[in-house]
View 1 (cartoon, rainbow, N blue to C red):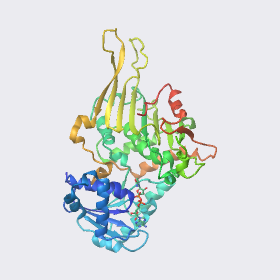
View 2 (cartoon, rainbow, N blue to C red):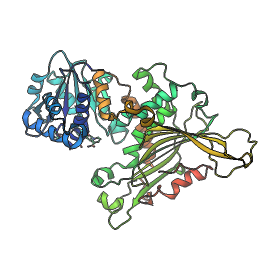
View 3 (cartoon, rainbow, N blue to C red):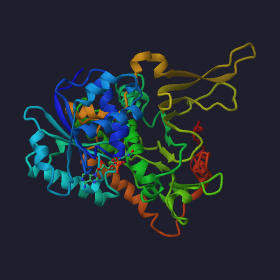
Length: 477
Ligand code: NAD
């Protein structure tokens, strides 16, 4: 469905994120016919370019990062005609009048801030001072949204100075993933799960976001943040919220976000014994975390595993185990809902049976697997075996499961004015308040992350976090 005509201004349009994700995503939406005829994209950045040079730059980016662009010269050219460029140094005064001049009065205005968060305040102020922002404009900001609670509050204050909360779209691209949204459909469009979705029937939940790559190339940036800030406070927290929240009464952005905030507020303080930090060491010389971080003594974690308890009626007694890390055995993201054993087993004990689990895979091969127990086929008496019901969305849904990158979906939601998949200010602050408590324990210089081998499943201690509770992580594979 095409969206309404818009002027989308991308601050930082010559930067890495714009060239790799935002502009290729917009091109894809154009290619599938979702972009209205009167849509316009205005690049705004410090580089000394004119409209033609910016179009050339974007044309090159599309060839590099949008696979469907090659061989479609006509289509690419028609897309490039939608682009304009204004040179603006956002901390100065130049360029703003030209931008104001370009904006059309009767279309949706959206401002995408693909720049350092230190510039958010200056951009928000200038958009208002120069009369570019209207009460209906949207402002989109990139991660990281703060480094801790205090900085997140300061960023919120910067934005709220010129925009109302209903105009602010804080991106967590994880929320734009097909399967993440499917979590809501799976939970709330089926009557099968809801009666079982509680501590009476669920033994525990595992959320794993494993990366096989290390911090090569961005070690300096990463070393100031670490896995807790880079992944847990935002992406894993979002997955936890969507898995644990109560059914919202309607599919309205605030109804959904209210329920997510309630989950974060119900998180119990985490005991130090329930947290494992790790740092990978290289397989060869000079390939460990510390070699890339540029600090031979770095204490930053490239891995974290946490046992979290949610203190509410639904989840008391059902821990959630979160784990994420770099340089692990494989790249995989999944949520495992592990059900309790039947209350009484009349069958002879069978070694190796792991019980019922619902596995929601976010990547690779988005899909759902249900692990069940059946009779082992054959004449050898009634012995039990495991079998899985597998549904890979691409196989089951065919061409309808057409890849739509998270960014393009989210940008179109901005134009539609739908904030459901964006984090609200109080939600981000609540997540930081929780993360800060944990990070505070690590300030002590004696606290070192446990080393783990590149290509492994993380530190031994992370396995112990489960074993001591009589549970096991699902293999990272
Ligand atoms: P980048 O350094 O590649 O690009 C920065 C852009 O900002 C350039 O276009 C530059 O011209 C512009 N800019 C810088 N200072 C300016 C000023 N004073 N006035 C006007 N324009 C100015 O950065 P990036 O990697 O594209 O990241 C942009 C934002 O997106 C950052 O907040 C980053 O944290 C976030 N982000 C990036 C990625 C990624 O994969 N690159 C992923 C997630 C989030």
